[in-house]
Length: 288
Image 1 (cartoon, one colour):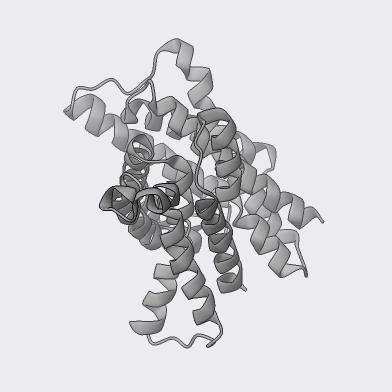
Image 2 (cartoon, rainbow, N blue to C red):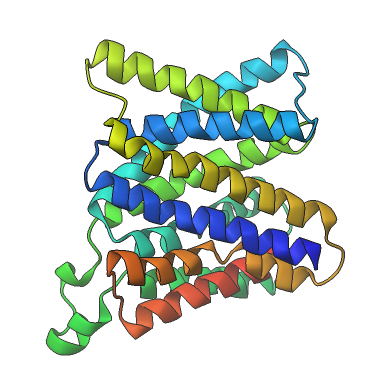
């Protein structure tokens, strides 16, 4: 039960963060939103690590890898925020969630690692769900399929999904051992330095939001830390009920969809919502 609660907490944290990003980008620039997300995330992770007694620096090699991952993270989040700025956040979140598909295909066809035959069925589900979610079916049924029926920003969604597929396996390997809050803290810390150097020093852009927006944008770091803490709790404490746990872990896209409906007034077609459910089912099956 504790693992399931952790999984739900993680999904709510990450799913809600997407809504805060979208709302922030309606009045702030990408660098302003990203800087506050990064700084508040670093602060929350540091507090969490100190309070739990898990803060530990294992050596210069850890810091070296943290710098490399910080460079990748800044690239990833710049692309993610650009995607959210121009596209439907519900669709973008759901489609980008299929990035494990790319990692799986890479290991099977390039690294020649074996994969159970039945899992190709779940791969097909991910592809099907991604296609269904990416098309405005109400317009298709009204006027027939046209290029404009594909959701806006699909190119950015695909590109960001590819970067997710490369970045998260490295991040997962880096945080699998030792203190994950400490490692994530240093990634955030170095990321903030990179954002400041590029946007504030080189581009001469403002990287902090107005004072009245700081509390709202600071939620991003808290929500992201909540997501990581919940997911870590879930994966470290649960024995049994694997399918239920993984489904809960993958349901952040569903959380985003529900919140976007009420707070952003994003309404998808029934087939698009079905596509999100299919993606969650495919991710669950592929992860077992």
